[in-house]
Image 1: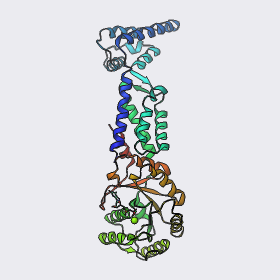
Image 2 (image 1 turned 60 degrees about the horizontal axis):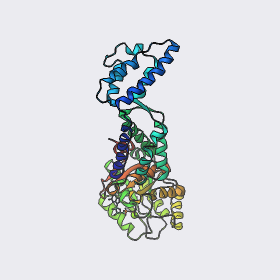
Image 3 (image 1 turned 90 degrees about the horizontal axis):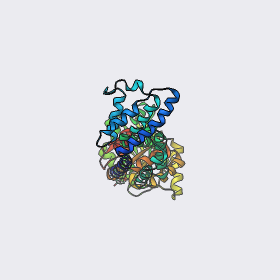
Image 4 (image 1 turned 135 degrees about the vertical axis):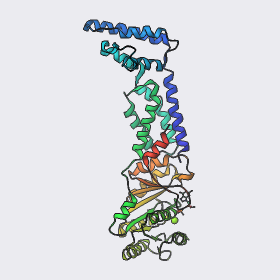
Length: 386
Ligand SMILES: Nc1nc2c(ncn2[C@@H]2O[C@H](COP(=O)(O)OP(=O)(O)O)[C@@H](O)[C@H]2O)c(=O)[nH]1
Ligand SMILES: [Mg+2]
């Protein structure tokens, strides 16, 4: 589901090394710089009566090089640190200031200006792929605070940026984790899950997938046809119930959905059924009556889990939908559907960040097994991995 976002982020990060590579200087320039630093440092050491030899040795050594790359400089530095023992006594004789001179050549302390070379590109890539503005801003802020004044090896700037992006993406997506199976298993009374959301997001299909998931894990459930509003919705759920071999509770169209769920709860309690999975009609902010009806279902039945079903293809509207339902009844978890036909990926970042609730599953197709437990760390790795 992350094809487009992954590609754009990769491109943006790829440009980072290009931008910094331009700063690799020709041999003469570095030698000159070293010399002038050497003079400054020797003046200082004279004052402090400290030994000085290393900078001179390095600039002499560099004279033999055809081309100075950051790689050769790093090798030099490693040698200085005793790894290759080229200058076994060098470090001991080296004053502190000179060591930091080396560090400055092979490493770079990232400045605001450096960061501004790539952060706007990354932000654009996020925004173009459905990451809500607020979320993209936060990711960039996170990155800025983790990278600013960080010393990174010039050769590894790209991977430092990638790691920082991964952390920021994870921070945006990761919420308290939720183990649905454990919640259902440990509940003393039938665990009531209400599936809610806009029209056509995949509520009914996802409910059937969750029933199948519970059944596979030996947890019984009953389905409740509480979408009494949309034509054919009861038949649609009945078909799933029949295929899965699970009982469905219903009333006629137009009945009060709060009452249908109440019936379902009583049915499950009487038979020690572990979970009650309640379908509901699709609604949006313009359906005032339907929003009031949803509030009533919740008020009367106090479901244990209110799961918001979000269609990833909704793109930027995900943010508004999540807010709307969370403000109306309080959402506990999210399932993001149609991940199989969604390429941009940003919805996953925006959805959970907006209401600070976890995504528990991704819907990845039309069949019952197309329900993937959501693992934020895996997704961040997939998205930003090399
Ligand atoms: N490709 C794909 N289609 C899905 C997924 N979930 C639901 N759908 C389809 O989306 C459409 C609407 O689903 P439905 O469950 O009726 O939505 P509801 O109105 O919210 O109950 C149906 O055609 C489903 O088959 C999914 O994860 N992937
Ligand atoms: Mg439905």
